[in-house]
Every structure is written in C-alpha cells, then in structure tokens.
Image 1 (cartoon, helix red, strand yellow):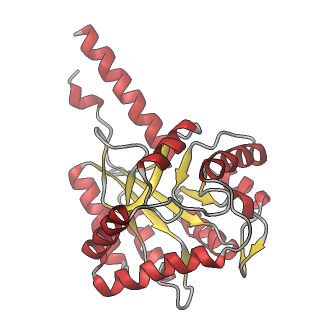
Image 2 (cartoon, one colour):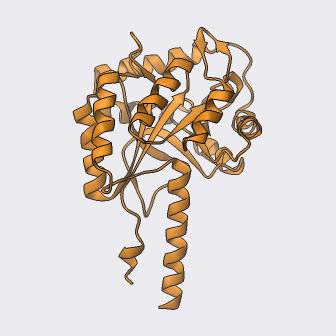
Length: 278
C-alpha cells in the first residue's frame, strides 16, 4: 500500500443558502432528479415564517430532505453576519472583483447589503446567532447540525472561532476557489457561487478542474429564476450542469460537507496508522 492509495478522489458538494421556500424546494427537486445530494443552509429563526416579504421553508420539508440524504446546515439564527473591519471588507471586495469583474461585483455586493436590511427584527449577539441556530436545528431535526455557512460569506477570525467553539466541524465562506483535500481550512471553506451570469459551460469547467486536479468543489446557490436578484441562477443552466455532474459519476464523488470532512478525517487517521506501522 502506498500513501497515495489512501487519498480521497475529487468531490463536489452542492449547497443552498437562506432556503426561501419555493427556491429550496426547486433546488431539492432538481438535485433529486439527478440522484444528487446537497446541503441546505437554513436561517433557523426564520424557518416556516415570512420575514421581510421572504417566505422560508418549513421544518417538515427539511425533515423530508434529510430522509433522502440531504444535509441541513446552519446559516445563523437571524442572518447576522461578521462585523468586519475596513481591511477585511476591502479584501472581500478585491476577491469578488477578481473573480466576477467590476460590474458584476458591484451588483452582487449591493444584493448582499440589501438583503441584510430586508430581514427586519431583533438580532442576537454574534455568538448567540451561531450557537442558538445549532441548538434549534438539532432539536427540530433530531440529528447533529455539523456545518455552518457565514451570513455575508466573509468571516473574521473571531467568527471562525465561534463556529468551531459552538461544535460545528466546518464552516463555508463565499471566498472563490477550490479546496485541496489534503490541506484545507475547515472553517474557511472556499466555493464557487452561482449568479445570474453563470452558465452551464462555466460551471461544467469547475467540475472538470476538480476532477483533473483532485479538488473539493463546493457550489453555492441562493435562488432560481428570481427576477432582479443577481444571485439567482437559471433553471435551464442548472439542469444542464447537473446532467454534466451526473455524467461524471465514477470520476467525482457527490458528498455533503459533513461527509467530506468525515471522509478526510478517516483518511488522515488511516495514513497516520500506516506511517506508524511502516
């Protein structure tokens, strides 16, 4: 046995943030139609409610999703993000511009800022947002909630520590990129975010790169066919892309975030045991 034989192959994880009712269901149906599984990051305090004109998915629907293999993660309790300094905000904008271009970045940034303002009501302290959402999700779902998605997508180092200390095994940003399976930061997972300009051809190239370079690709969705919302994806482009993923069965594994974390830990433990024996 060689050390390479213990390495995991490439992985693709499909994730959905916010989980507005009709959109979460549409993504689930699209994933299920191709026998693919994903992670649905819910705003725990809003599940089953209408907030700021947004109707959120119900707990019963989320329980049905887990029954067919989807994972339910936390996207905070009321969508309160990280308190970022100017330097961090500038770095976030720079990454977005480099990945998406100036015009697209401006529209996407405005969408993120506007969404934060459209969720009215009382917000908890940041540590409470992280911990309370986990408690509520686990109570309602009857199973562990292991993965977190940062509201706003850009965490401070203190925010990462909160996610770790609350008991999550991972947390996803919206920092563009891929994750190296042998050396990734579990509380700063990178991803590729779908928006209204994303085509199936673009997303297919992400998958092909993950396969050729043995990477962990995490894709992020928010809404489907939602007018005037730049983080919405085209249903036709999504279905074409999911068909491409399905065609790559055997070349790339479709796993949830927690499954990938657990698989990586098992591989590292096996590698450690092999090194000890050898």
